[in-house]
Every structure is written in C-alpha cells, then in structure tokens.
Image 1 (cartoon, rainbow, N blue to C red):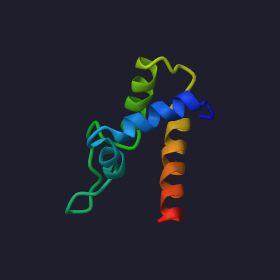
Image 2: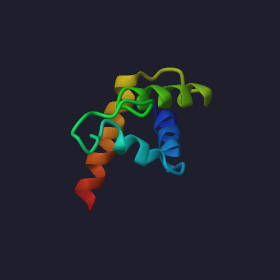
Image 3: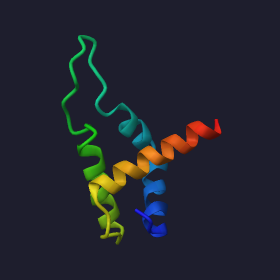
Length: 81
C-alpha cells in the first residue's frame, strides 16, 4: 500500500472511535486461553478495512497490504514513544 490516498483513508479508518481497538483486540484470547472467534479476527478486520477503502474509491489494495500497513503504523508508533 504505497498509495498516499489509501494511507490517508486508512488513517481515517483508524481515527474512527473504536476502530484501532478493534484491530488491536483481534485474535486476543479468552480467560480460558481460547482464541476468540467473531467478526473481529485479524483476518476479518483487514477485510472490512479493504471494503471501507473500496467504498471510498480506493480499489488497488489487498488484505495483506492493509495488515502490513497497520503493523507498520504500530511499529513506527512504538519506536517514537
């Protein structure tokens, strides 16, 4: 995802209330150590982001590129904090 418009749109998604937490909590474990299964898994969240991007006119992105960019944003944030 090198498209600046796609990155800007992804940042808009992140800034919507609860969206970053949705990504961060994906694939967390329950109290008994089992993986949560819902529409908020680390596969489902990037798919919903791709749909969001497409709804906003960004068609040239993949689930893998979204996942990579979210991880990259996270890594950059940690390095600066």
